[in-house]
Amino acid sequence: MTRVLYPGSFDPVHLGHLEIVESAAGLFDSVVVAAVGNPQKGSGLFDLDERKAMLNESFSHLDNVEVHSFSTLVVDVAVEVKADFIVKGLRVVQDFESELQMAQMNKEISGVETLFLPTASRRSFLASKLIREIASYGGDVSGMVPPPVLRRLNERFPEKNPESSDS
View 1 (spheres, rainbow, N blue to C red):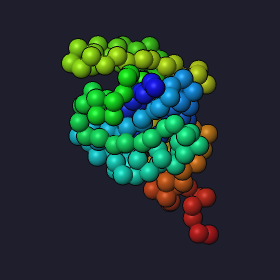
View 2: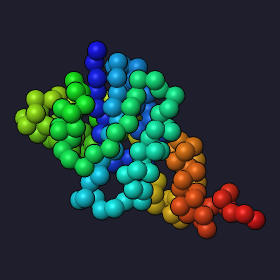
View 3: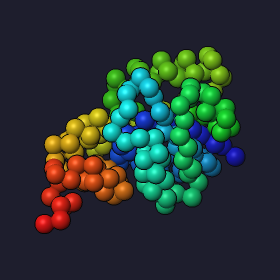
View 4: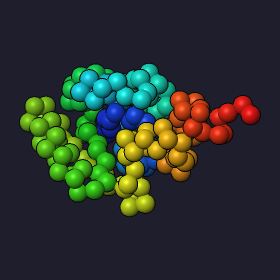
């Protein structure tokens, strides 16, 4: 049985993330999606419990996916969940440059290999940071995030989203 770890901040999870998880779920026996609490990135829009809940709801249609959260090194989580590989999604060349360095470091300190899965070009522009910004100004992100995330974004920014007002 091959088990992989897909770590990320997922603040919030978007359709590019969903695509990577669905691909991994089709390729491997078991996928652990783990949201990181990274103090270097600040508190974020959603806390770790909210992100974990959104991940669980967004991936509920996949029987071989489980969701975790962590605030430690990714390789420590990989060892803890007995992952054979770490999976990372790639959107653009810059992703490869930074992810390659992390993959090499992770391999050096733990022996765990990283596998890269490319996103489809129609989703290569998606980034959680941009989605947060667009949603905060009332922009339409409905085609970028799963329904559980859209609902929470509308709740977080009700004055910006006419769908969430009571009028």
